[in-house]
Every structure is written in structure tokens, then in C-alpha cells.
Amino acid sequence: MTRLRTAALVGNPNAGKSALFNALTGARQKIANYPGVTVERKAGRLVLPSGEPVELIDLPGAYSFEPSSPDEEVTRKVVHGEFAGEATPEVLIVVLDAANLEQHLVFAQEVIELGRPTVVALNMVDLAERDGLVLDPAALSQALGVPVVPTVAVRRRGLAELAGAIEAAEERAQSMQPQPEPHLTLPERRLAASNIAKAAILSETAQHRLHAGLDKVLLHPWIGPPILFALLFVVFQAVFAWATPFADGLEGIIGAISGWVSATLPAGFLRDLLTEGVLAGVGSVVVFLPQIVILFAFILAMEASGYMARAAYLMDRMMQGVGLSGRSFIPLLSSFACAIPGIMATRSIADPKDRLTTILIAPLMTCSARLPVYAVIIAAFIPATTVGPGIGLQGLVLFGLYVAGIVGAMLAALVLRRSVAKGGASGFIMELPRYQMPLVKDLLIGLWQRAWVFLRRAGTIIFTVTIVLWLLLTFPKAAPGESQVEASAAGQISKGLAVLVEPIGFNREIALALIPAMAAREVAVASLATTYAVDAPNEEAAAAGLASQLSAKWSLPTALAFLAWFVFAPQCLSTIAVTRRETNGWKWPAFMLAYLFGLAYIFAGITYWTAVALGL
Image 1: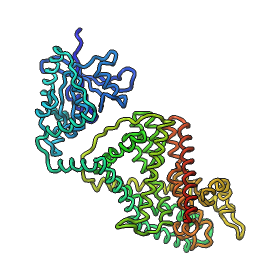
Image 2 (image 1 turned 90 degrees about the vertical axis):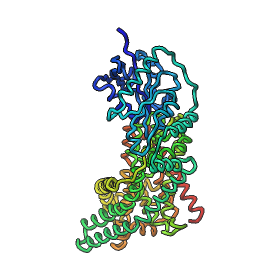
Image 3 (image 1 turned 180 degrees about the vertical axis):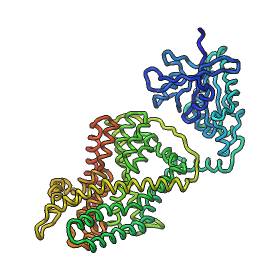
Image 4 (image 1 turned 90 degrees about the horizontal axis):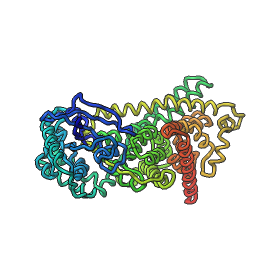
């Protein structure tokens, strides 16, 4: 029995290969796994215009024949005939996304350089035309030296022409030997791809030219990073400047409710529970909802506009220097909301050492749970003054804390990649979405979801921990003239920890707040508020805002050390739990706890001792 001749679809991920494969083969498909790997093998029967059947293989998406993932390794082996029992394809069909032609042409050149019979399917030309780009397949064919057929797989356009081109190439395969083309370097391929893509453009709209111009500026290696950091700087200025009126309003509402409870209920357990526990503790966290909403409004807008993917591209160069790649940027970016989804997002990183490093540094990204901690300390100790046109000192300090977390993460990655997770940076290529105006409806839905998550944490985890802490602070009752916190069970528990953190400037109240903060970072704010409310000499002092109480009781060096602690400390048990699940053991979570708490202690101490030495 004569073996069926074979053809293979190759190309970048998201080029529409699977849609084209389904359109060409219909129901005549078989799905299995390649031997020894979990990568799926899809093969189907393609009938050529002459009636001859050909086995068509849909290869996994790849960016290069130098593999950085199991998918790319399979593609390389099949194309080069290195899989035992797998026939070497006689014809290669390179599938290009017409809307991302320049990027897809880089790998296309590498395929064509093999010198094998090749056909190019210029796919999704309808989407390119929708975006204002009309291409010339003939010019592209002349530049590449192989047939180019425009297709729209989902609408079955160009399939007959593509089948005819495959048949002609298949006939050539029977009478020719592979003639490898000159091998170009990657920079040479990229330059050639840019020139070929430009030469293939018949027409483009002003909008398409605008988007291309934006990419030239926003993705420029020298101009792009300053624009990114300037945008982030504006975000953190807005977090304070825009949120202050709303936060003050919420604080006033909570204060009014506390006053009403005090005036309505008789003195006793229930009134103290509501005023000192619920309203002072949980309320001190809820007032930071405006800052959370404003921060996520900017993040969601950047994602919806298409800029966030470009930020990942910009960060790739910096991350290459510490042994990571842009693939780690998306999980780390997710960690700005919460480290848990960020750590789970590392599953998309193929290199195990790269993935492990990203998991270990994810808690250093300044998650939204840190924002209430930062905001209350900044409000208490940093004056609301301007240091330049439109530049507030409080927003500048907040920006500095976020930058400190990023720099700390990069330095930690540098050390980890040269020690426990030794390895080099892997390559990184990603699809850049087109620019678009964010939809207000989508932004509002996203903001509501994140606000609800924050409020739900305030009503569950923070509420529960605060009530438990209040009970521990309230009993046993202090003797006349004795501090209630000192006499309480919580005060006794915190004594041992207070001895350990006293050298870095932390007081007893901070030591007490660090313990429940392991449940969630923002609980530290609720804990401090509850502690000072319980120990207040009168109801007026208890009702005072946390920021005003801290400014009266803490020194500036202590406040700065507290901020430095929270830049590094991994105070979230859920993060530790998900790290244990993703690394299949307790070895790496224990390592994470040890090195992050070590960094937190060291840098809090350095900050405190330096501030004291400077006389702050």
C-alpha cells in the first residue's frame, strides 16, 4: 500500500491554523498525542483538486525552530523529520495572520529557508481589511519566492486556490531535492520582515497608520520606558489626589455612625464591640475603597486599550537582564491586584526555572491589599504638599513604594537565577492586540467586580480577624490605671514578638498587628485601629481617625520602617497556600517565607536606623 503524501500547517500561534485545518479537512480528522509528550497531534484527510488524498497535519504554533516550549519542540522535530514513525512533510503550508504580517514573517522566512516546497496562506485578510489594511499577495509572493494565497478560513474563502497551490507544490516535491536557502540571523529576518510587510501594502487607512505610528513611539527602546513610567507616576498621583474627597467622605460617614451608636446604645459589651471592633477596625479599611477603585480603573483601561501588552513587551528587555523574560510580566502584573492569580498565571511559562523564579518574586509586587497600609501611613506622616506642578508629595511617595517593590523583585530574580533557580532567560514573543477605546460598560463591570472582592474581604476575613482581635484585646480587663492592651491576652501574646522587632523601631502595637496581618495584609490597618480604639482614654480619642492617632503616637523613622517592612513581607497565608499547590510541596513556600521575611526585617531595620541617624 502506497503511503499518503503529507503536508503540514505551520505558523505562529493565533494565525488561524486550526480554523484553516478544519475548513480543509472537515470531519476527516484524527486526534492523538505525539509519542512521549502530551502535545496533541491533529491530522486529517485533504482531497486535492485532482482527487488525490493528502494527509494534512496541524502542527502546534511556534515562533522559531529554536524551541522554548514543548509545542515548538514538536513542530521542529516533525518539520525536520526527527520523530520516529512520523513522516517528514513533503509540503509546508505557512499560515500568516494578515493583520500581524511583519511579526509572522519572521518565522515564515525560517521555514522557507529550509528549501522545501512551501505555500503561504495569507489568512484572515478580511480582518486586516476591516482594520484598514489591504495587502498585495503577488508582491508578497515575489518577495518570499513561494506561492501566496489569500484565505479567510472561517468563511471558506480561498480554500480551492490553496488546495491547488498545495497540489502544485506536492508535484514539485516528487521531482526536486530540498535546496536550503541562505541562513539569515534573527535580526536580519526581522529587518527583512519589516521591509517585505511594507512592500506588500496596497493601501491603509489613516487609523491604521496612526496605530503603526503609536507603536513606533510606545515600543521604542528609549522612548517607550519613560512613557510607561510617566503613566504609572500619573496613576499614583491620581490615587491620592482624586480619592481624597471620597475617602474623607467615607471616613466622615463611619465616624457619624460610630457617634450615633455611642449615643444610642448604653455603655457595655455590645457598644464597645461595634465602635471599637467593627467600626474602628473594618471601617478603617473600607475608607480606602476609593483608592482601590481608582487604581483598578487605570489598570483596566490600559488592558482594554491594548497598551498593557505593549508594556509587557517593553519590560522584556529589563527582565532579560535579571534572567527572566516578558512571559513573566503578565503574571507579575496580575500580582499587582493579588499575588494568588499572579502565581497561578505562571502556568503559561514553559521553562520550569523561569516559572519558579516568577512564583518566588510574585509577592514582591505591590498588591491591592498593601494599598490601605501605604495610604494610612502616608496620610499620617507625609504632608499633602506639592513638589512641582501637579506633583503631590504623597503620590510621589506611593509611586516610590511601588517602584521599590519592582526593583526588589528584579534584584531578587537576579540572585535566584544565579543560585537556586539557575538558568538563562528564555525568548519572548507575544501578539500585540490592536488599539481600541475601552468600553465604559466593561470598565464599570470590572470595577464593580474588584470593589465587591475588596468589600467581601472586609466583610469576611477582615471582620472575623478584627472581632477575634478585639476580644483578645478586651479580656481580661485591666486594673484601674493599667493599660488595657498591656493587660489583655493579645498584649501578652505580642510580648515575645515585640522583643524581636523592637531593634527595627517597631512598637508593641505594630508587633500585635503583624500577627493577624498574616490572614490578609490590610488586616494590619484594622488591627492598629482596633488596638488604639481599645486603649483610648475616652470615646473622643477612640473615634479619632487612625491616621491622626498614628501621627501622634509613632515617630517618623518607625513609620518609614513599617512601610519598608510591607514592601517585602509576604503576609498572606493564601499566597503561601497557593505557592505550595503550584510547587507540589512545602520546600519552596518555606524558602519564600524565609527570604522575604529576612528582607523585610533587614530593610525595615536599615530604614529605621538611617532615619534615626539623619535626625528625622
